[in-house]
Image (cartoon, rainbow, N blue to C red; front, top):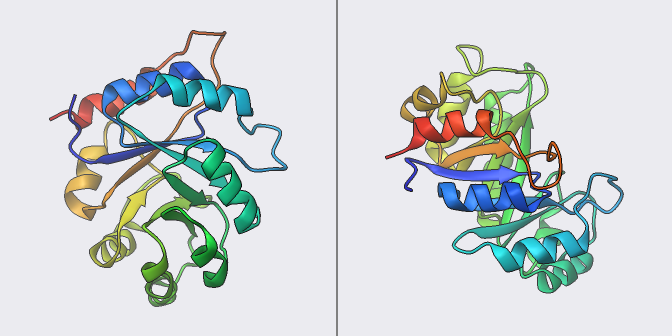
Length: 206
């Protein structure tokens, strides 16, 4: 299956999600590897997933881990990308041995010029940015212009406010590099309700 834009699915923690996403044509599946997070994926689970899926890049999601720890885990689990869910110093990013996706948060107080200045600074050292928001639940006239300006200048994934009813509009009007979706818990082992993801994927089919 071909999708009209690049897709990252974060927070994958089970084989059902990983196989489903790979089959739907997702480009990157991300795994929570945050050292102090009880929701982090277990090493054996990640090794099992990595052994089953193909044709998709694997990303480790980190927060506050030192670059040497990130590099060790990237080697152990054959990660293709590193997603940093908090700001790192540029010196630290340069020590990471994989391409980096930097998570960026926006809110109602975000100033466009300041955001672009920060992204301009980091852009030579990261592969792309993924934009989240805890303020905004949707993408509308309050934030669309900001996102459009950012997407003009940088490799940007939109990671919030996505629904089947607006995802085509977002791709057409904002023109991001891609979108970021969220995986989740299995209802019971081996069984997962994919309705929400499936509705968005259907909108994105070529």
